[in-house]
Length: 180
Ligand code: 5GP
Image 1 (cartoon, rainbow, N blue to C red):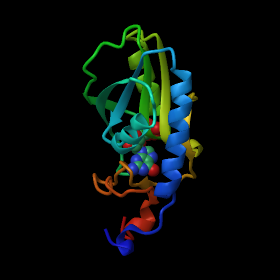
Image 2: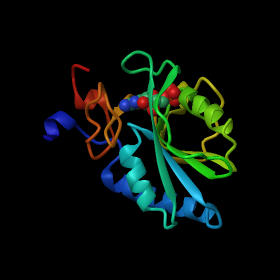
Image 3: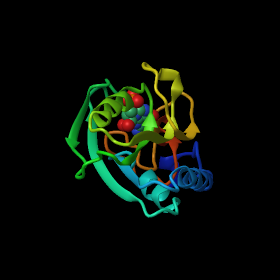
Image 4: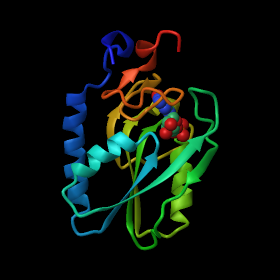
């Protein structure tokens, strides 16, 4: 990865490391007496999920679901499709859904409805990034890494046309690829 292609970080690796440690400890305190099941929303959350899970000093369970949202290249239409579901029942479990970014809030709303119907003991949401300026629905996010302005970002799991997920920090797409 040359610097010329990947531009300047919006959030650096060091900032991310510190914040994820803080989030991990907070989550560990909140779930001390519970049996935490962390559900990662793929593909975008895969890097954040791995770091967050390792920052939570609890014997937690993990599961994943793969979703894709229909829409334009840089916009979620809110029509979410589950490509692959989690593999365990969540009935009676304390579930924490881990997302990469909340933008319109439509994906979160979709997942909340879907998961609540399965009767978990509790359901909370954690996201690395929150972009509240484009919100279309009222959502409650229990744990937020960073609140960011209305820019399309890539890296740390987030893509543009399935690229840049491996960038080790968050960068604004325009700073990464001039013709995007
Ligand atoms: P929402 O349903 O909240 O509008 O959108 C959530 C999904 O849209 C995210 O999981 C992500 O896939 C995509 N998304 C929204 N904003 C961005 C962004 O700035 N960068 C990237 N790479 N994806 C985004």
